[in-house]
Length: 510
Image (cartoon, rainbow, N blue to C red; front, side, top):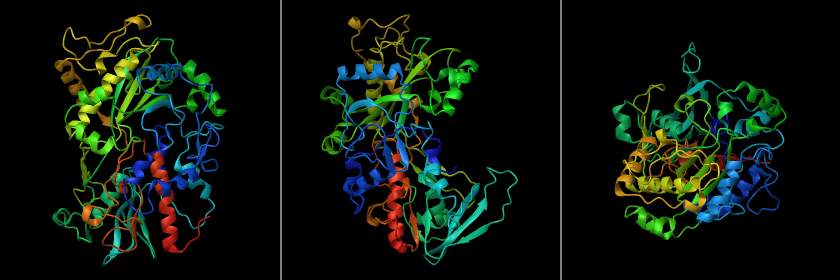
């Protein structure tokens, strides 16, 4: 899809922490180097004169239609400060690692439209005669003369066009080939081209160009969504997803004017979370050294990101017809589990050997158990809370204090006390998070920008080790995860890549 993930993502404006860039320990990629590029790419509509934000870039950041602000989002922001999560002015200032705030969106406030890379960067170049875009096309491999990249081999994508001619075509490159196929696509293109673990490639009959650990370090944020009942008259996205005729009749004309619920992602508030001292004790021994070595010295890093989704984002047949829900979504900011992606054939259509690695390490399970409990305590104090939607919660033992409830009216706030969980309850939560963990589509880190002796595949100028005239420019190269939805990092990486490519080619950027 033209524009990649930015064309279909959740529109959540979220930026990496300063220490995320600094931890890469790569010249030219520290936070001080990246901040000017972060400013350059955005037009920030939330407030003036914020030093870490930009006000003249191609990508708009806003709250969308200010009149369509969920009452549930405000309830969340009223409740969580009472539970030790402060309301902050700007949790995307690169330095805040713990706090709640209204959540901004990649949406133009004037048009209500998504701010994707295709429309903000590519379509404005439609008159550029030097730019040629081939859609419905699959890259088979990069071509080499020895170790020098000389072009790419492509084929029409029969998975998008069933009758596509499968004749291979070659595009020649005189100066540079840049692979930018994402953290899943780039490693398989490189491997088919002879760049990867030598023994794996030889077994597939692929001539080795450069022996590198491509695809061996896959990462993704681990997401668990937790649903709760709200009153049947609450404004949520549910009737829109149900395509309710009366609701759509009103919403579509509003959207044409850049207003209304169709100009929203129905996600208006959330938090960056770090555990309290008491919670750290409960998190247990597997997480303790990670906290001490990684999180404690870096207060700008959240352990978990949490968002309130104003509706049921799941299959419609899994909830009672006409019901209203909210979901609290939690995703691990810096999971320690790792997966891999390896080709299984020279065939560009062959499915890869792909393993997410989710919950491969115990610490990642423990932080989600903590986040589930945190979510329950927040939800139980919201005025619109009417109980848990039991089919998508842990199966607690009979008589458990944590058992799901369903209320006919608002909770009795005076009687709400924190749930005390037993060992059996914790086991039920673990079973639940293991069953319902899912991707955030934040795939990163499969072609690492690190020294070659440290499992690196590209250098600080994005050049692939052991080759000439070949770069990789996408989220596959980042050598450490970011505590954020990854769109911002992908965009700023593109800005940085443009600078490096222009320098290498002797071009002057405007």
